[in-house]
Image (cartoon, rainbow, N blue to C red):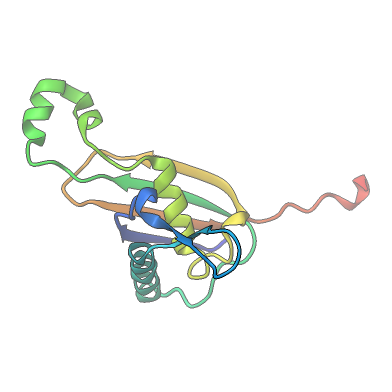
Length: 153
């Protein structure tokens, strides 16, 4: 079972990932076109360079598990927040939704580390306590497909 862990920069927000513009053809009605933003393209390029530097030469084929640990930005007043809120201080930190982290990250990994994000079979998302280094640690693990016993068929 092959596995790789990558430490990546904070992904762009899903709100910044797509852009929409209205195209007005010479004939017909205006249409909205949605496309990937320049920020999203730059993030995918960063992911590509980091993956290659970590030895990724080809995409993983088939089913896989994705484990994502997101470390949000630690604010300058974190010590005061710790005193005021105790163990729950990091709940006061503004950060991207975990769902947005997963979507942007899986799109950036597609065609670089994984063949297609439709093959995600197990997904673990965790928001970690900010430790001063805003980042995402993602582990991609190939999953073996269990073959049914022939005697049962």
